[in-house]
Image (cartoon, rainbow over the protein chains, first blue to last red):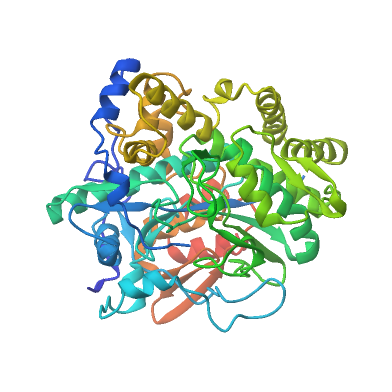
Length: 59
Length: 492
């Protein structure tokens, strides 16, 4: 894999903001409304996700 | 009082469906390269010197985690420059693959709030790259702003501070080390369990388990509390970059501000030669025992068979700063808020700090769950919730759930965060980099923290970016690259 061209994502400054062509955009989120909603979100978490989570050491 | 330029570099954890740590370098490369926003791949590595030590020598080599070496057996990831996949973003930030972790390094900032805004904006950059990678790879991709995999592998959230070289290593080390050990009580991100020593249900810090020495230049293995890497990213005759590797990744921007503010206090005191003197008997034991102390006594052993507490050490910095420094409003606020939090913690009222300290928010969340649903701290689900606290996807993250519920005050509106995509209201040297890579990008040959090299016809012209000055916004009005260069050099 190589970068090839020095410019990876050309964009004319001033014509678009980041987010308008796929960059960061305003997050849309479903708001949890209280303890029950938080619990519902917790129950969606894979209980084994930390067990499966293996990372390389970083700095 | 001198404004201290600072930045934060966050290595994110990466969980890709049906992929393992052995695939992580390839996955992080693909994630960074797929970032859908504007960027330039022109990073200049000439000034990087990770083996140089502040104490005046150079390491022959840096230690590597032997487990990671096993992952790499028989695998060729390509040329180092391709593996790193460095991108410079329109706001002057750096986004790249650091040892298999997507890393976002904020633009340099003077104020604590500005730095926290850029740190949050970085989450959105990484999340957008992750979503693009999920689509292209047709795999589920999750990204975590944390520092551990719960199996003994850690990755860092580093802070960088510009410090005059005249302060010298000895004075800086003595002033900073105690602060790095005690600030976790006000800034730790919290962790279920332990990856070193005896089991504990919960501890204050994600990183404390991983420090093996008080001081050295390593970062990947045998990590020190005080890192001596001498890679200054400025004129080495004038400056050093204090490279702090012992902090946690904070989800709460208020914690980020406090984490950086406390170190800035210690740096100012070091510069004034007014830092309190603490002769710690065993710094590594202290950072780990404070982290694991669920009773929050914060006891620290001192030379001569005496002892103190983390609270006393913090108060000694606050008192010295108030007595000897002309503090700005942000640092005054850090002291005021820290004292309020310390009073609550000393009284055992840690739950009342849960809207301001990550570890307290996480501990409260998990204790509430265990209280209502039953179970044990050793259950795999409890660690899964710990990890999910750090998910940067706001629809899934447990941290963002409690923020949306109002248990943690909202830090900033999205518009203010989004302005950090290309703005730099403080006019740090990142503004010059930002203008160069947007307005004059066809002339940029390479760029790094310290300088920008332009290509003018067949000449290469390098412009040093002085780190301690304000770059005026009218730089944006330069009509052509040669005018821009003259303005940067102060000739216009």
